[in-house]
Image (tube, rainbow, N blue to C red):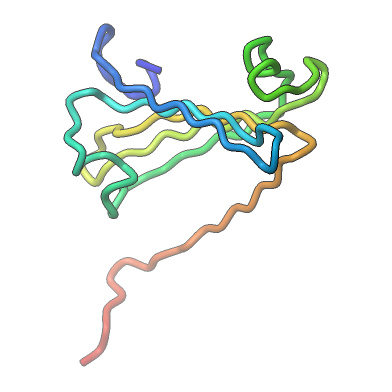
Amino acid sequence: MIPLLKVPSRTPLTEFLYLTHQSESPHSLARIYVPQDLTPAELPWCRPGWADTRETVTARLPTPEEASTLRISSTLAVLAITRVSSDTTGRVVEAARLVLPGDRANALFITHHTTEGRGTEG
């Protein structure tokens, strides 16, 4: 995670681990990392105005730990999503790895385009 967060090695990180369920079955596994020096008000999900969020989606086989946690076969493909978010100063404030079983995953991508210099006419 250190390279994704663009911080020096041995920088203290806070890890958030989320395991969501759909009925009785695990649905997704997320590990979110933020630099430990961020105050709660600076955490990405507490503040609007992120400058940039990049997501990479890969289909692959699960690691043994992921297969066990998600209660899936080690031969079932998963969608692995790596998300990196930065604030308006360019500082990376979050790096996340999400894993979803391939037989239970859907992806929806929405892009909002903005036009610079566009304002309201008065």
